[in-house]
Length: 145
Figure: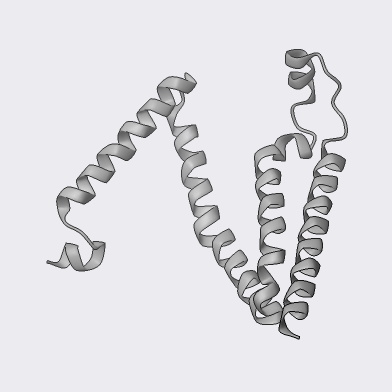
């Protein structure tokens, strides 16, 4: 009863989840060919702690402030910012200039312009979102009169 109240489900559910996480972790280690398992485990734990205890509260507060300030228009800010953050997360090593030698060795291409391209894509997302906001605002103003 205590477990169900604290966890939200029975012990079989908890054991099944723990076993699936262990299996997924083992598969990641095997596929990646990683031998020092503790380093990878440290990265996973660090990423979880960083996200859940630092980043999540930070962007939740920022989102609430934006929602209070912008009202219904907040989604026209949320979408381009979220997509830009997702692109930054996916490409952060190259945005920071890390791995230039490995990139050149593997691809035989030049390494430059990623930060500028990410900034241009982010600005484009914001412009498109602003245009959609303006068009919808004019449509709703035209239909109400």
